[in-house]
Image (cartoon, rainbow, N blue to C red):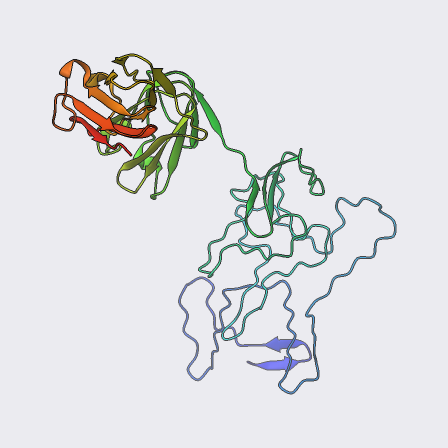
Length: 376
């Protein structure tokens, strides 16, 4: 430094602007303090130890509106990314420095709507993104007057009428209104990954379950309502895994309005059902010896000495098919496989004698023969 005259500081011109490397004269001190961050404005509120402060605000912005009844662009703080070659990072960056941080990064209180996400000329990738390692990503208390989360058909935030709300999760996290996306199925198809419920209106079709590449974790479930009795076949996409332990899974139901569920356990498709939400017995009454129809799960035998011929084994939907026989009178009853196609309790026929009326015999397929239980 050569001299200081008021606001003018004069230094020796030792730098060489035509070269990237310069060498100052011996004995000349040089302090280099590069800045990698620029500030257009910098405000600090420094509160010393032992202060009498109980509250503090570094910068306060206030607006008093006595003239605009329905303001659409009246803002206390307007942060603009000026037209440039590149984007900015954050319009507001709330963070700590060293040992101290904020209790609340953003605290919005007492407004008509505390937070709104909108789009202008640029459509956001996400209205909200939780990327931290917080213990809880999104937390709701129990103070909400109406609900914790709602999904609506319009953007009127004050409209909580049932006709506007498609889904409602209450203050305790309980679903109180929840629709399901339904796919109407009348022919063979591949089930879309993002449609977990199918209404199957035609029997005799094949449904391919979604590819495992679309299922990143275990637990995905697909439910099918089978509106007609008949045979249905389900298989994995490109046979990439098993369905119910086999390459395909076929089910034959003799009742309408049944339900079957397939759930991915992380490796295989597990099968549950079919079952009915309201399933009633299909009852057939035999007053003379004859065939026990396959569609009947309960058969009333009204007279002793009757022979009930069981359904053909080849027509059974799967192992586990069961018929229940109500023995209305005391006496002897004969149960015979159809054309002796299989055995019953390892016999060609089964004779049951009861000394009491209103007894029950259950006969069930184990996949290879008929097994009888009872009377009781």
